[in-house]
Image (cartoon, rainbow, N blue to C red; front, side, top):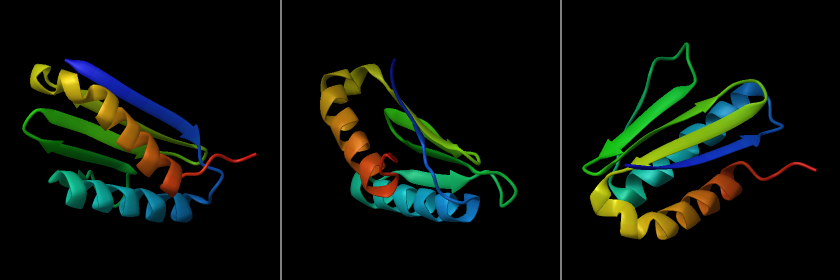
Amino acid sequence: MSDIILLRQHGKSRAAARAAAEHLTTELAEKFDLTCTWDSEATDVAHFSRPGVSGMLSLDDRNVEIRIRLSFLFLALKPTIEREAHKYFDENFPTTT
């Protein structure tokens, strides 16, 4: 197994961060055929998966984090998957200065 972990301060209100996270998970689910579920309305944790890939996106008042776990079969694709994850992360949670 191999992990990709991205962590960033989001600089958004909790509601705006949740909306951006929902948009991000919808984009990822559509493009990569992932199943995505949110734990519940009370928590800000989404889990996503497909054969060979699993992960979670979580957020709090300050940070957003995405963790992606790749099976052995996807190790060769790790650089491509990591590049795409950064792209989607940057689009939905641009760095604050």
